[in-house]
Image (cartoon, rainbow, N blue to C red; front, side, top):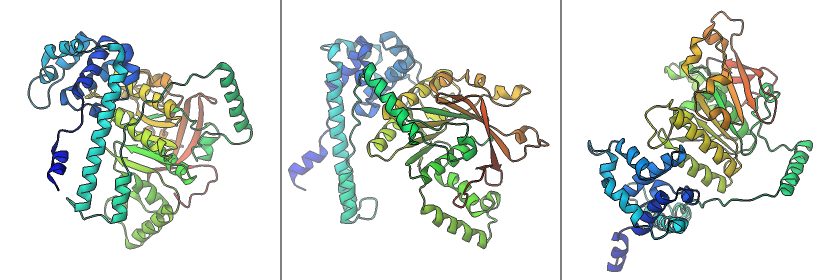
Length: 459
């Protein structure tokens, strides 16, 4: 490496501190500028204190409080620094620094332009980091050296910030024509909706339409995760790209249930280490068979922010690799400044609104799981109903579809509904509501199957 090369690699990463300050200060002066810069993630800002401030502003704007000197000071003063016993307010420089932000803004109405500068410098940092990653991979730093083909693929996969979607005004006449085309699609048997793959459920549920948010709610152990994974696998089998964000279980743990069911191997014996050689052989055969069919992709990431979800979905959608997004579950999505209580009403409302917005912007069906409040257990009738969502922020109004999972055998061991699960359609924008479907629940593998005739050899 020459002297000039060393100067390039060792220099301070690209950034524009004045532009970062102008974005922060401009938003404090004029909250109406938020729509033009809201897509910036914290990492777009180079200075750590600016990242902290941006996270706080995002929280305040998301919950409708608004950003000004008082609200920002109050929020930061209530947050503890991760490095000492001081507050985040002291960590970023105190009230004096907040006041200085507004004083350094040339023109608040030009905040979108300042935001574009911040976005550009962030893109340059991403390019620089990617170049260093390629250089380390070529040298085998921390791993085996990659082949030329692998290096070429790595170098070509350049990460870039997602661009802010522009607004699109549609005239009433154009909207009418769009509606007619949609009806034509339906009449021709070409519905854009994605069916669940369970025949019994598909009779009463009209499927996941583009731009829709579907909530699957239940108490713990009812099988909501199993139902969602069963749907994901059946959708993937039809050639659709399905991404599952599992925030509670590892991908291998999720696959274990479906694989055991496909191989007719007891999940209990598999997990307890009692699987026989013949059963191991059946598992390998089932895995090979399933690999020939479409399967969902999983993301093991126990601490996922809403912004990380948005970036992943946008990236996959732009690459034409996403038809259905499944998130398990809503309460585990992180919202900076609102974490610590998964049942916090405002936090859940922020997430549900963000997920609905994401579904609309990407024209993508989003399915999210939600754990219902334990207050349900206090009443005699344990079947979930819409009122069980009313303590969960905006979920009831944001969701296009709401499905509840209920198994009577969980509460009544002597019931005549052994091995039967009810899927209650509590809300459905495109169809009838308050209708039920009955599915077979296999407790030995924690998987669902339609009671109607269906091909099960791959499941």
